Image 1 (spheres, rainbow, N blue to C red):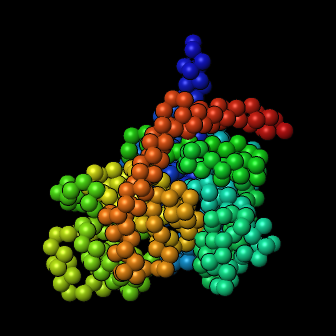
Image 2 (cartoon, rainbow, N blue to C red):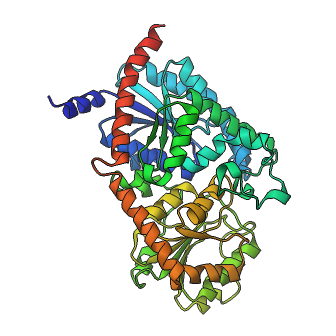
Image 3 (spheres, rainbow, N blue to C red):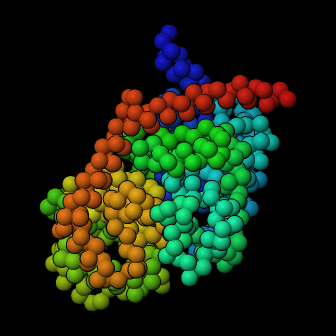
Length: 468
């Protein structure tokens, strides 16, 4: 039997348990990773919370187990992300332990090779250790922002954090070109909650059996080197995930996708449309919403605008738009509540992506060679935006906030000026690199092989742990 076939036979008798954090930007990469590993021969079990749970029938290739999170209606609707995270960590720990223990003791299932989990859950390490199961972390943000998080003790020591208004425009010397205003932050009723989270993730990472990233070496080589040096654990950049296996992402969406936008894009000229989407969590006020609307309208460029219910604080949907606004566009704009984003970005009509620079969106824009306008809101988005504008130079950042004149100017620079052509050339080169890294001999192809071998090697460790 050839070494390749032998390895596939080994995998066929092995099960992996994956535990995604229940927010859209975390569910997508975890389910994409599940597809990749299933395609490579592993059986996959997904443990999910009742909160934001997926319909198992949309993923018949996986086995699903749901655990109770016991969130009240008000807790599930919590706007304070860190408070929501705190509730989930408090309430899911014991149900997760019970579920995992039951799965590990099952004689009817294949032996479990390891647990793959999201570091936002702070209890998975202690549970896995107590059950003598190796665990690997999936980091759903990029390597560059992860390297910034890992520098938090130094940033604290040097006085960069907590951020001071007087220093926001300063470059952080140790992380150039990142500025103080770009340092990750999630606003909360208790500011200390965020720093506790960062410390917890750093602690978990050091003790884990590996770190998986949805990125590729050519894009984030320096950051990956920093992470390897800092944590001394195996690091596997095997992205872009969504290009590894056939698209199934619509089945991962918590919101219903409006496919009318694809029909509308079919009527537009190549590279003529600005696609606007700020992800599944970000919120803006009414004044910002109107500035975006007028900035898009005044640009005289066609646009596809995703206005998610809840995007505009205090509004259900489009109510703040002035009477007659939509009619005045004469078909130049199309507005939907949610879109099949990967399909939209791959459409020939799309020429610019205005994004919140969440990591999934940033990587998807790169993979389709679409120049970006960046307006980050929280967490890693500010670092991603800085890399888009100042490191990779594949987009522009709205540095002074959401103002209609700035929006018009950014659109004009990207769609009509020489600067836009240069940016398009650079992002097109990164698109080519993203495709090459997944082919045989590419860095992500090799890293995936390394990950599979690493997972298979953990069996001897499990034997050793359970015999102690």
